[in-house]
Length: 82
Ligand SMILES: [Zn+2]
Image 1 (cartoon, rainbow, N blue to C red):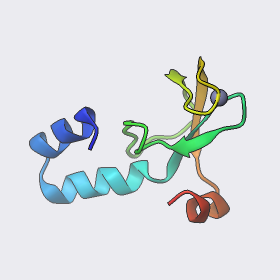
Image 2 (image 1 turned 180 degrees about the horizontal axis):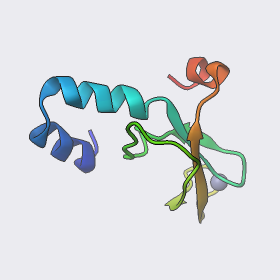
Image 3 (image 1 turned 60 degrees about the vertical axis):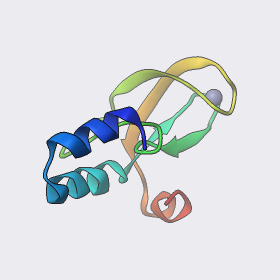
Image 4 (image 1 turned 90 degrees about the horizontal axis):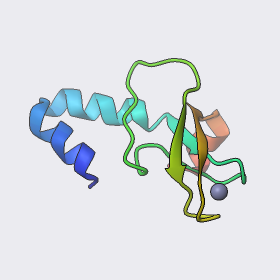
């Protein structure tokens, strides 16, 4: 578990933590090179949020620090990236 998530689990009731995790699992981070990964697995947290924010992150595929777009997964992607 990522440090950010360990902290969340420490401060939140289990039910809330599970809701945050479920909400975050709806999102992915996309690198300009085309690599996508689960936002939760990348250590991110996103809960009851909208829009497509950007954040600098190191991409495990191309190895560069790039602007990643955070966006909601399509239904297809929710199946492909559990
Ligand atoms: Zn990349």
